[in-house]
Amino acid sequence: MKPLNQKLKEQVLKELLKDYRISVNELANKLKVSRNKVLTIINFLKNNEYINGHTIITDPFLLPQRTIFFEIKTNPNEPWLINELKKIECESLDGIIGEYSLILKIKIRNNIEFNEILRKIDKLMAKGYFKKYQLIDVLETYKENGVSFRNQVNIAGLDDIGYEIIRILKNQSVNPYTTSEISNILKSKNFSISQPGTWKRIDKMVKDGIITNFIPTLNRDKFQFTKFYLRIKVDPAQYDEIAKNFLSQQKNIVNLYRTGENYGLLAVVLTKGISNFNEFIISLYNSGINIIDTNTTLVIDEQLKKILIPAILI
Image (cartoon, rainbow, N blue to C red; front, side, top):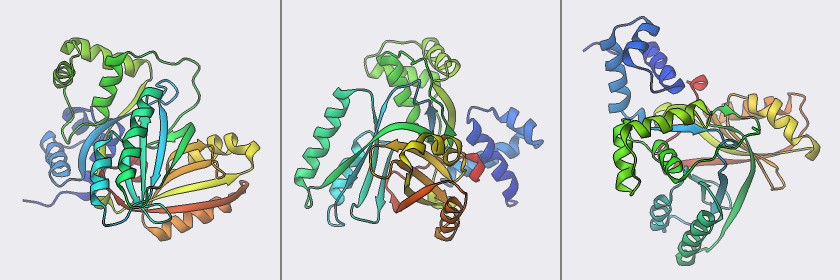
């Protein structure tokens, strides 16, 4: 069997990262290669765990969900704690270096969900050695998974079925669900909806701008990206301006949030190693933007083994 062309693999992956719903025929025509070659590459990416799942990106202004980070203190002798945290519906769970050992990202709909999550974490921490965690509340989302957002006037009104569809689409396996499969999952959760009804719901959420992207999740180990949480302090009067007009435009910043902390901006940064991260930090300070201070946390282990890498970084 001939080795697969590396450039073509990257091209296929970049197109899938723009929208995984693109058909094999469309992709083959776009890249001017055979359909079989495209299929071979897609199967290679899945079978070798370059692609390990599928998800969606939603507009945080049109789909009002509260984003919360929990920084948790633990030690290597408490693997059970990580296993229990994985059972909580979260978007990321990272092992980090610093005062805290884990950072957990969760999105919730309302105070009822928040209180449920808080009770679960309190119960787990009561069994732990350190019994210590802190909560970081996101006040505004400027950028998420490589997509920048602007504040929208109209807020979408979704019912329970709509939110459940969002949850299902955000947590798909290496082969994305069909609308028929989603309909069956909904029925197993006591939601009565047909396959055509499911398709119409998803189509409307796309047209309304609630769902902005359909993308694969990737195995970071295969791409050798290093992940950092970067806290940024600027003049309080300039947080919004700097976040929207400068920081959110940086390709290595994949997530950017406003928080109520002393360092008012929290960014998730991906680079090819620590040396490239150092170059990135120097470029921020040399940009002419009034950045007062930064604080960096290195991610040493992604417990969920799934990462969203924008096509621009591949």
